[in-house]
Length: 180
Image 1 (tube, one colour):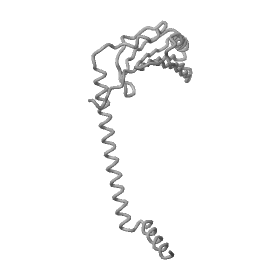
Image 2 (tube, one colour):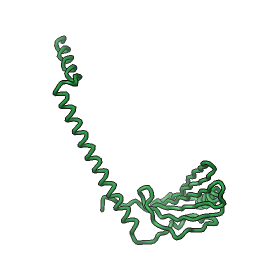
Image 3 (tube, rainbow, N blue to C red):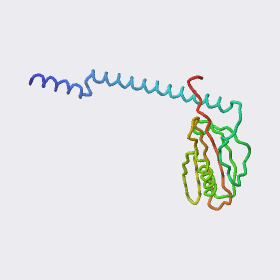
Image 4 (cartoon, rainbow, N blue to C red):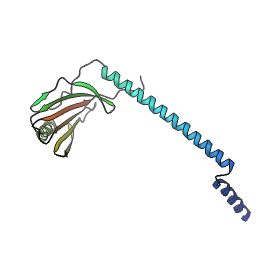
C-alpha cells in the first residue's frame, strides 16, 4: 500500500511538472483541439447568422399587405409620417408606423391601455422611462389566442418639446430558417 501511494505521488509529480515532454505534448494537443472546436463553432454561428439574414431579407421583400393588426388601438391626435413599412429590427421583421402626436406620452399610453382593457382579451405591459427630462412610454399589447400577435407603442417627448414622437410596431411571424 505504501508502495502504491509512492507510485501515485510520482505520477502526480510527472503531471504537475510542466517540463515533462508528455505533459507538454498533451497540453499542446488539447490546445489545438480547443482551437479547432472554436473555429468550427464560429463557422457554424456565421452560417446560422447568414441564413437568418437571408431569411429576414426574403421576408422583408415578400409581397403582401403592410398593415398593423386590425385590433391595434387608435392613437389619439396621431399624424402618420408616411405609410407603414417593413423593417428589420433586432433580428426580426416588423411592420413599423412612425409619426407624431400633440398629446403627452402618458396620455397616449393611457388611451391604449383603456382600449386594451375594454377589449378584455389582450395582455399588456407598460414601461415608464424618464431620463434627463425625456419622457418615454413603451406599451406592449399581445393577443391571448393563437396565432399570437403583438403590437408595441413607443411614445417619447423631449423636455422642452410640445410634440411626442410615436412609433407603433408589430413583428411578423419568425421565418422558418431550416426550410430555406
